[in-house]
Length: 242
Ligand code: NAP
Image (tube, rainbow, N blue to C red; front, top):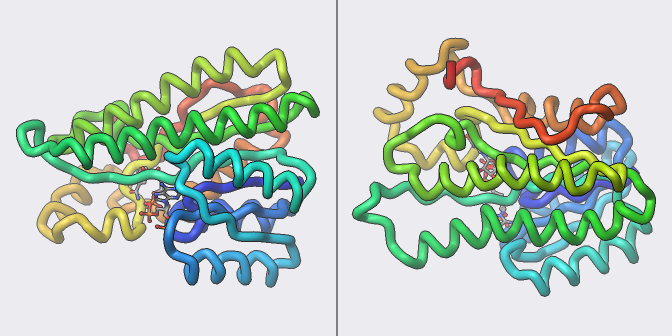
């Protein structure tokens, strides 16, 4: 079994890559810029006894994505799981949103997911089997000031998940999304301490989640126990959105 995880050099993507390797998958480790971190993840997967290779490709760039999938096919010969995870957050209130940041968020968080889903579906269709997991966010269903752009991109992820699930069901491919709340990664480290404390008070379970918590849900969706589940958004937020 082979899984491609986008944005797997750090954070949630890294945790998904490691958990899926523990579950017996060989892993294609996608990343954008951090060669050293990606190489570390590859080494950790190899220590688990699985095959892994790093693929540097900006998911917002269709040609780069097409090239990556060609290389993954050459290297691994098949693709069973795509975890669409590579994403960026760049918070700004409406009047402060700048054009470059807006385009970057739309390109990576939406176009990037379509690019990879399209290429993965092409590979999975021939086997009539595959799983696509899109990493969304609780911000897709919960209004957070300053996250207009980010939440719009994650709302798009939820919508595309439902539509692609319906389109790809006859091809034996399921498509689901995971919507995490606050998860301890570098993305969260960037939030100022006082704001972080306020966020923490709003989580009923009283603590932030870990990347491993997300990886466990992703791995469950990849298991046969979830073969009949498609088009769903699984919220994983310690009760934040209740
Ligand atoms: P992170 O720690 O900032 O890591 C981002 C990862 O994405 C890195 O591996 C980075 O690669 C890669 N990446 C960024 N832009 C890319 C591009 N254009 N092409 C390919 N790879 C790219 O992020 P995270 O916190 O783990 O978040 C991962 C996903 O979970 C995102 O979709 C995010 O929206 C979602 N999420 C996170 C949280 C949270 O609390 N952390 C909550 C809800 C949802 P390099 O290392 O090479 O830069």
